[in-house]
Length: 242
Image (cartoon, rainbow, N blue to C red; front, top):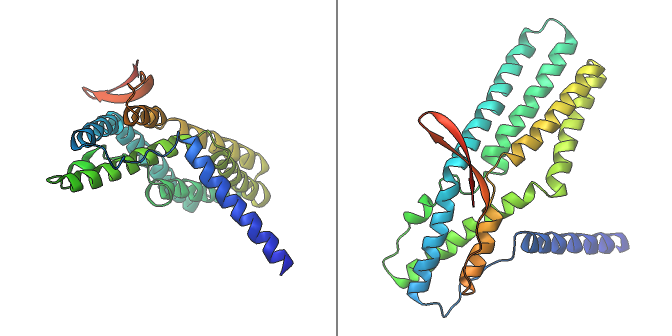
């Protein structure tokens, strides 16, 4: 009983710490002012839609590129494992195929990236009455907060600890049951790939939330300096907004 109470206290502390980290780490949680005029609600909606649309193309390119990378690796390595003549190669390819498949799962099941469709999910909502527009704004704010929280994850220890644990485990399996050198290379390459996966996501989403909070408080939004990726004429362009 004593051990359970102690464990329960630790669990409560962990939940409170996590919620607090999410709130402060993403710049706070804006709340729709109950006395905000309908014109103010429309203004905030327009601001959020503009910012979500500003990241849409980069998000789509990121999502599509990593689907090809992770999905292609999962299938290709699985085939290579089936065709391999040595047990070391079979273990190496099969283990890396599982890691790549987990990457696909992260994109589509475990952590789908917010804002993939820009502001389109918001535009389709009804807004004929002021109450409907308030509900629409609440959902728009939720996407904005989720996008900012997602960006904050890549500099947090939880993501990088998980990345290190997953690829460290994969490298250990390969090294123990197959070739040690292959295990070291696979673990290191997978860890670096996980970092590239996180840091190639769109930048500036936390700044969007901070700018929105300033707008909601009646202040002018700060300049949003951020990198983005866009396509034009079949070519990719990297842009810096300032």
